[in-house]
Length: 366
Image (cartoon, rainbow, N blue to C red):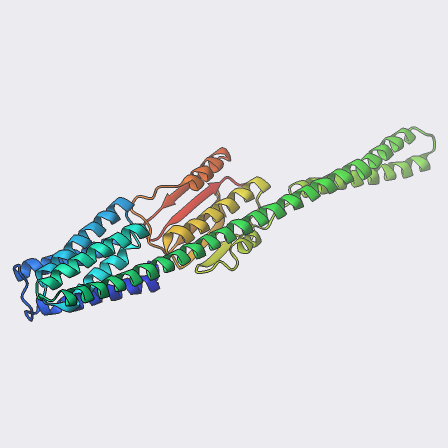
């Protein structure tokens, strides 16, 4: 389970305030216009609806929960019109609306809530000045709450987008560095093969021709030189082969990609004996990149663990966070593309969302 951040604690505080201002009616210090058990049931429904607006469900369900919370807040306020502090409930409703609907809708809700406040105030006082003052006061509080919460949400989205962009740029840098290094290895290998390899091949052919000259001593030295030249040629070819498909450091690449990601603690463990080809390494880097960006954008997690192991079934990368998870996770375009990439390489990508969210990618060994 992810840590309860500042927004979560703010939501808890607002719910505590909403219940606290309702205590006089619950304890019999104020008389609702409807039966007290029914009023208590409406309060319980309001609290549950507010909690449902922050649940990891679809947007439609969260909007329905918000609509229910709005209606129940109006019922609570209008059925106990003499409790002035109870009007704070409409401020709470306006504040949570910014997490569910757009700013214009939240502003419209604040105006409607103000009308309810005016109606509730008019039921206990005949002075229109008092009604206007109290309604205007609660309208200003709602506007201040809506605008401040919207600003905080916008800043949070910007930080999230900045962190995601940072991961993407670091991943692109790692892959670009690999591409440059691979191109350099290929260039050097071609140079070795064209220059030294060709010369040694010519030397071998000349020595093969000299083998047929007379003289046992000369033949013995020529044979020895021939063997040395053949050994050198074999060494050059082996060096070229190693340079074309040399092992790469996946651990360093992953650590470089996630270094300095704000708001997320990423731990990485890679099998020290792991050997991967360029195509496989690129696939795992892309999978780790997608896991990190999805965790930043959606999971509300504080920690992410990435493990890469090598076993009888091949090489496996597992990325697991401690976030909220989802009942029925729906892979986006990024994960679908990675799943296709892994399947083309003879592997697979699976997702799981029980305690947090985890992504597992497997490829056969090189």
